[in-house]
Amino acid sequence: MSTLNPAHPLGHAHSGDDAHTHHELSFVRKYVFSTDHKIIGIQFLCTTLLMLMVGGSLALGVRWQLAFPWKTMPIIGPLLFSSQGGVVPPEFYTMLFTMHATVMIFLVIIPILAGAFGNFVIPLQIGADDMAFPTLNMLSYWFMWPAIGFFMSSFFVEGGGAAAGWTSYPSLSAQAAAAPGSGAGQTLWLMGVTFVGVSSMMGSVNYMTTIINMRAPGMTLFRMPTTIWAMFITAILQAFALPVLTAAGFMLLMDRLVGTCFFTPGGLIINNAEPTVGSGQILLWQHLFWFYSHPAVYIMILPAMGMVSDMISTFSRKPLFGYKPMVYSLSAIAGLGFIVWGHHMFMSGMNPYLGMTFMLSTMMIALPSAVKTFNWLGTLWGGNIQFTVPMLNSLGFVSMFIVGGLSGIFMAAVPVDIYIHDTYFIVAHFHYVLFGATMFGVFGGIHYWFPKMFGRMMNESVGKVHFVLSFIGFNCTFFPMHLLGVAGMPRRLADPYNYPYLAHLLPMNQFMTYSAILMGFAQFLLLGNFFYSMFKGKKVGRNPWNANSLEWTAPSPPGHGNFDILPVVYRGPYEYASPLVEEDFLPQTRRLTPEQMAAVKPPATAH
Image 1: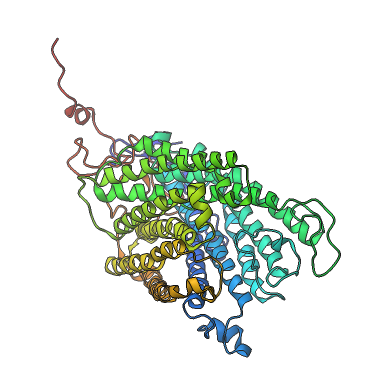
Image 2 (image 1 turned 135 degrees about the vertical axis):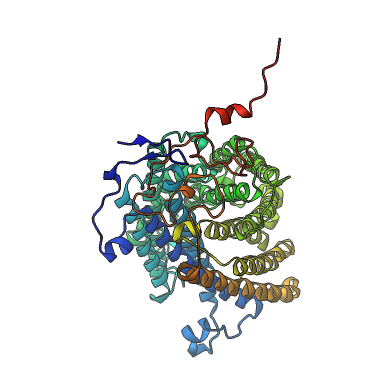
């Protein structure tokens, strides 16, 4: 039961005493097996930052081989291949790029957005005291650790880690120990993907239920910040797309372990044995995989779009330009994302009419994406811009998203895709979208919500240096890949310079590798700043950014139940530079008097 407290400066309502009374928990129950959404969000964040360094190390291994083929690879080479002088064998190179993509997609980008920021921000921004299902929320984090164990242990089993690419196409992935990298490591890979999928499903059910049922009084759907809209739409994507991948994974596991023929065609010879008997369809895996994995592309960027919208509005000191079109464009991108999976399969021999359908539907995604881009630019236009670290990273997100989106339009055209398919042009495109854009959004979000997580500020100077080095290193690493792709350099080749027409590309690859090393080591600035500021950063109050959304009315860091008083919402989250108040921000919870409301109404016109 709650009672209104008009005397409170924010016009909140007091919450009942029973909402905040709780028994003292042990350290393990409070910080390890926690059911508090804030602790779970921080657990996701710390874990994914650790896996970011693992995935980045694997990427540097790939870049080293392309820059200095068959030279001793630092650390990895001597550690694993001392008998070969530290030179990485060709089979291990395929494991490197397979596991790099696997770690970055399944253990970094998806869980850091949906797991870390979704968990921490959703209840705070809608005025709830926790998630709808706290125990399920805890399990969603701990189900990720078996996946980490399966993925990492695959390097140390007989035959090595998975080496069929992160797409795991049959028939290579369906052959048990028929080729290097397709043995036990591939089985562990499939089990890891299954656990990641279960973890994400738990989170999606929780997010949808929480957002629908637990909003604070006055928090209508169109008073929610775009971060919440993006998380809500992402949860819907996960709920509808993940069962398809999970079912496909089980079928592929049965093909490998039981001898079924879902994806294994008849006549395939495995380990010099008798030809298989069956009528499996190899292309069926591609359809099932991409029916999940193209929506997964938006699972990996929609939350960042919502977060960046919040940050750009906050640091432009302006209302978000076109709030409702922004929400509708998020929904349109998600809807179109379900009907374009076939553009990954233009080379599979599909009917040209079907290919044209996928091509046109893919190009249609450019429209809501353009709406969002102009929304961000319209918010910036004429604003009182504050170049904080979150704002710099948000601007980096927008610029990288534009480059990645424009290159995506090229690939949507079937004739162009036939030429650049499986070249480094494709690698450049998805890194601009899924690493450049998404990770700059993540970097901005870490700095933006860090004061709310820990009650302290991260160092702004170190953050700006990290941004500059990451921005330069990223563009110098991945922009030249467009040129490599147009020159015809294929993906997944350990030594492309054996082909005479590619030999002249070695200096460019070496330049890209040096840039990747710069970008990789810049992330130590982020980690150092993060963990140092956690204990030594400057202490701040509830609202260091003078922002409007509900999380900034809670204590920093929030205690049990999040809010010391139950928030009541009176307006949207982007009332900056409002004529109703003298300040340049107007929190959602601030209740204005009728006199204040009437002061800005235009005078009645005499008739």
